[in-house]
Length: 162
Length: 162
DNA sequence: TAGCTAATAGACAAGCAAATCCCCTTGACT
DNA sequence: AGTCAAGGGGATTTGCTTGTCTATTAGCTA
Image (cartoon, rainbow over all chains, first blue to last red):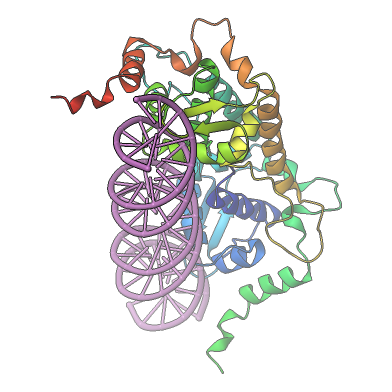
């Protein structure tokens, strides 16, 4: 019982994009900043692109850019792209009749799902950024991480010349 | 994002047992009543047995019996046996330091998990039974289901005699 | 327009949960 | 003690999720 890996990756990426507005972020930069595998990240971001949450630009100076305003963008928007919350609509036992009404057990389970959904709908990406907390978004972008991002941005290809 | 199949099966079985106190329920009966596969059900129930939630009796007139009082038995007790709620204890990015504190994103995700956990801890099995609702537990045990249970109890082996 | 760069798409591999099957052990009743 | 009914547990299969790799397409710069 947890949010799927993929959904978590997507959230990290969106938070990172919201933190770095303006210039497009390449897969390399995003991967370095969010600690998600370079080869998997594109897979995660594609559904977000299709949903219009971010746009991608090919070629030189390309990368991913957040399209939606973080103030109006919720956790739910991202999660439902890659790992939708599964509400219980009818009784899984599928007995006779009883469409539209759930038994106590499945009602209780669905209530819990509704709770999460509600919570995710109310939490905006923006609210994760200007937390006045000591812990910055994405669990601190420390020196190591920043260095990784810088090298991802500038000198990844320097391996050729050696 | 959902409760796992296995956890759902376990809950169904426990509710069924709570509804049928007294005599032990065989795998056949339980499977018929909860619509869970006869071959998979034992696998689901084993962890519950180890946790002392139910006891199993082998041999003739054997079967599963609920050990705990439904009033004190919560959804959480069952769920944590077969599909524990995964709380986020440290930042999945695992950067330097920051043990004990979560960044806003992961804090938000963990809050949601805490919410569910809290809800499950507060919902007892008993509360799913004496709901005065029109919909009985397990989404109506209708004629078809009862017939299946009866045949599971009495005449499953009648195939031999023919 | 040529050439480089970066995202895209698809095939492909690995790891894990769900489900099934079969044989073994245990226990009750005769 | 013998026999049959019932759960226990291991081996196996299937399918989904996660992850990797490569060839292709698109866009920017010169």
